[in-house]
Image (cartoon, rainbow, N blue to C red; front, top):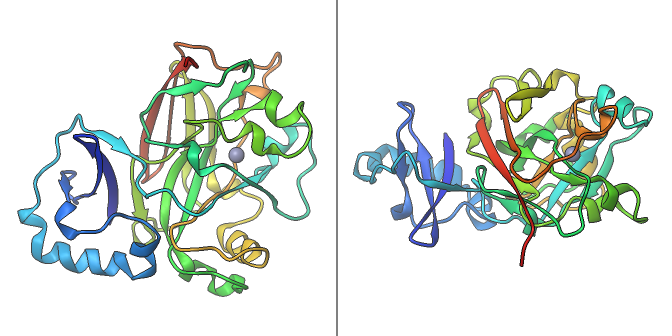
Length: 285
Ligand code: ZN
C-alpha cells in the first residue's frame, strides 16, 4: 500500500494511493497514521478495510496539499555519514559504528511545503535520504529479525544548517531542527511495495541541476543493522522514523560551498517513493 495524508479545510486526513494512481480519502477508516495505528496492526486492518470500502472513498483532487505521510512520531532519528562519498566530502573518515543524532519532530513538514531558511542562517543545505518507518515496538532486536519491525519507507530531505550544526558547539541537533527542515513524503510505501530498499536510486536537484545522484546500495550500515543497533540504545516505538543518511553532493561538499537562497527550488526523489519539491523562502515573523 501507498499511504498519504492531506490537508482538507485545515484538517489533516489519511488517504491511500490506489494501484491506478488515484488518491482516495480514507477518513472513514477512522484512524490517523500514528503510533496507535501502527501498534494496533493498522496496516493489516487498513488493507482489509480497503478491500471492502475503497470504491466508496471520495477521490482526492490532484492538486491537494499533501502532509507528511505519518503523524508526528515520538522520534525522528538520523544516521550521519552513512555513505562513504558523503563522509569524504564532509572531511570525515567512514565511521566504525553508526553516527546517530536526533532531529526535532517539530521540523516535520509536508513534501511540497516551502523550506524556510532560519533567522540568521547563511548555510542552509540539503540532504536526500531514504527514511524507514518502524511498525512495531523494537527493543534489543537481532539484525536477522530487524526487517520484521519495519512498516515501510518514505522520502526525506534532511535539511541542515551547517553553521548551527558544526560551528556553534555541542550536538548536531541545533542545525537539523528548524521548522520545515524535515519534509517527508509524498507517500509511505509499505515494506512489500519495495523489493530491495538497498537498491534504489536517490537524487536531488537544485534549480533543475542534479547535485545528488546515488544508490542506496552505497550505504555503509544497512537498514537491519541500523534498526538493531538503535534498538540497543533506545526503544523504537511504532511510527518512529529512522533516516538512513545522505550520499555525496550536499552544498557543504562544493568548492566553494553552495547554500540555499530565497527563491531556490529543491526537488528530490527515490525509486518507488515519489518526488517532492520545496521552494526556498526567508524566515519572517
Ligand atoms: Zn542526514
